[in-house]
Image (cartoon, rainbow, N blue to C red; front, top):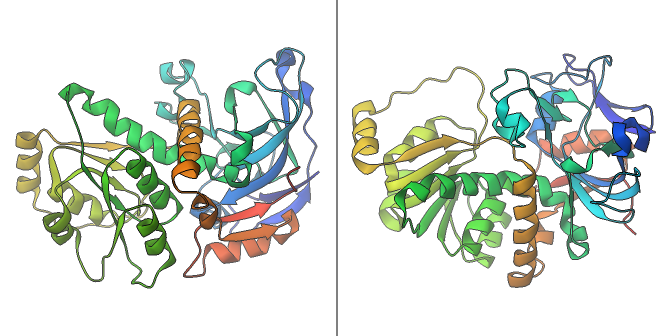
Length: 368
């Protein structure tokens, strides 16, 4: 079968190659699920892997199949599989278990292992191929009415985990009732995070760098969220006008914003970090003031990476709610479809260009 692959460690090595077609019996115990890939979203992670910034192939291979945002249809299942059946629409989780106690209880996204396994990212092949096979434990059914937006399942799971972490931590407060939230970053993840917070009844302010007129700002307005351009207003001023913020989700990957967010976080608030940063950027911060406000204000900052099955299932539920309350809104996120695996260059080009790009995805095959 065909797949879009890279040679980890070689910049701009993305290409299409023939790779072995997986089979149901590749999974022991008759627990295999063969999935025909329909569409795969791509994001900055795929671009960075192609730039050889990170990523490693599975043992025994010198290539890595890209793609971690999957949507497909079950083609066949092993004799011991009862959870899924041929014809089901599905999405697959990304991380696979290691050896820590967290991996053993199904929370593999919380692993303490130094080595981690992620499909399409590190040591496990991804989904930008005609088929994949996996165990049913890592495959989540997507309701048929969501099949046109099923490719949003993986980024939805990341947003859901970030929100779930905030609520889980704040169970310590017994009666925590957040009212206002800020989302830093207005790409696919930021838009979905704003959506899910709005579905929970919060007032949401989303901050981005692009001045209006701006497609993402219009989309936020459609769900009752407010967009602010950081060229016109900083986070501190935004907090004075529209805060204080009980939840802040930081997803820009611009680390100085983390410390700005710490300064404006409300008492008993939670700052969730989902943006990945590299390099060695250094900034001067009001350390004493931040420390004092966190101690006296019972504030929390927490990192959140990846997601597990639970968050995919919550994502499916909230995507269905979004279709009910904001019909057609999710489809507007799917701005740049690219047809066929052989158009891999177009995928990479669009990722790095374009003012109105929200979600770029590869249409690998047509849904029935």
